[in-house]
Length: 167
Image (cartoon, rainbow, N blue to C red; front, side, top):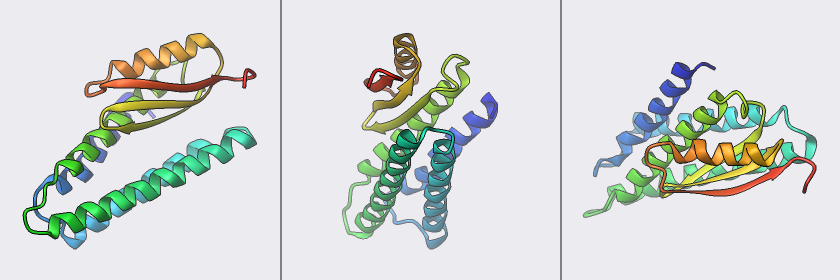
């Protein structure tokens, strides 16, 4: 994927959930679109796991499934709370922002030639980016943290990456 494709992906993820940031519940078409986006993101995450070693791949698959379940639960909860009178959609807006941040960090990591082959997972919660997975060196860890911190909206970066062979 090139830079423009990755940026378009980040924007589309943000757009898919920005619909849910309004005070009204999503229409059935919007809800289905959001569920489809979650399914597509899960499929993409699993595809990225396929090239990993068996132990890392297993962990990656598990992480991908957990993210999918959390995203579905969040969507369902937001849909339910939007239907309630006087509900606050701030939580949905945080999720939108976190999805966009995650996509942008993934794109930036992939775009960096020295990190492209690393097995780095990215998760975001309330602007806090968590990096996990396996890299070749301590330099790659430092580089990934710097790359993540440069993304707009990132409040802090939690580093859970491991240098291959030093588990």
